[in-house]
Image (cartoon, rainbow, N blue to C red; front, side):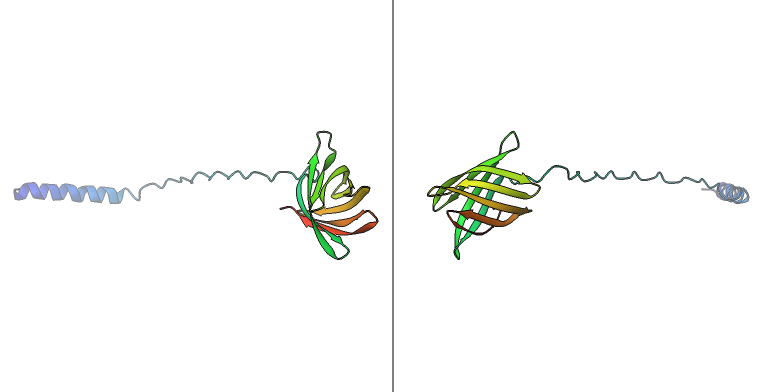
Length: 146
């Protein structure tokens, strides 16, 4: 490239640089970032509805210092009443009546060998405690959901 062409180019670049400098700083633009969307957090489901003990419970009856393992199957009928059975090595005893009041249940059942038996159970989450009586005996009962 000839010297005169190079000089013209340098002169043009210098002129442009001086013009840009004399014009002042580039204008500032205030651009605020868009606010981030707030994540939607689902509210916890309301804890409405009564406790429902329907299902299987593994119980242990204290019978004169000996433990008798019993499986209680509670079934809730469409009308809200409860029924079911108690099963052990002594056989199966139908639950003839079960009434739930909050977390407390009164149960009547046919005792093995005849007669009626009863239990009062207090449910606490997945555990249950209470007492039972049948055939002139009675004591404590405890258990849990399997």
